[in-house]
Length: 313
Ligand code: SF4
Image 1 (cartoon, protein in one colour):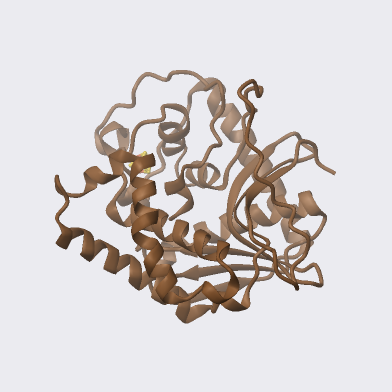
Image 2: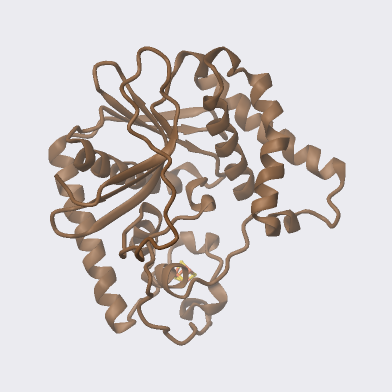
């Protein structure tokens, strides 16, 4: 069994038919030791796509201004999390819509800079239009699933495990369903507007990452990895097997090794692709005539954290 394995999140499995919830809501004490460097699916995906992008995000921590669509994704994820905290019978489309504005108020309070995406002050018309677009994503969700028939074990589940090689994996799972038989389903909501062919490989990488973490934490290979694309109502399901996850684990270890090598030397090279169109750092990128800031050295404490925006792509 791996060391230092944790799961935290919103436990929702309260009704009959669900496995015992293992999610807890522990809060780090103020004197908690600094967290070790870890690999998250978002940052691993960044490094695979472009080492320099990884550096800008995880090492330099250059600011990125989210788009309204990204913030809307975070809002919809939060609403779905709150929806599953309601009793089964209350999980209706109307209830989800009613959660939108109070959930936004809370998010806006926690991240006031997000409100700057709207005109100052935001007109009711502008906000209504934005909420309507979020409602469409929620309607799309209800067309794919009836949440009254589900009792997830946890939503927004923080998972962390250490591989035998010492690599620490860390991430957040949108939803974890566990059948009475013990079979695990990992569910991820996709709210972004990026073309499917670009997002799909990235999304499957993320899902396999979670599958490895759960396999190492619980000793069970998840039965299904399920992606729900709320922008077009399509679902994608995948069944991993143990051999494949073992190979994927080695891939993650190789990525972490490569990150540490680059971290020691500061040699994070750009790797231009069609994904550069979504990169916020072209002005610092040599492939676009820019100059990176001076390398600040390997960060202490670590990269490996994912923001709410990372988790809501
Ligand atoms: S613009 Fe492209 S090549 Fe440059 S850092 Fe961003 S993703 Fe990498």
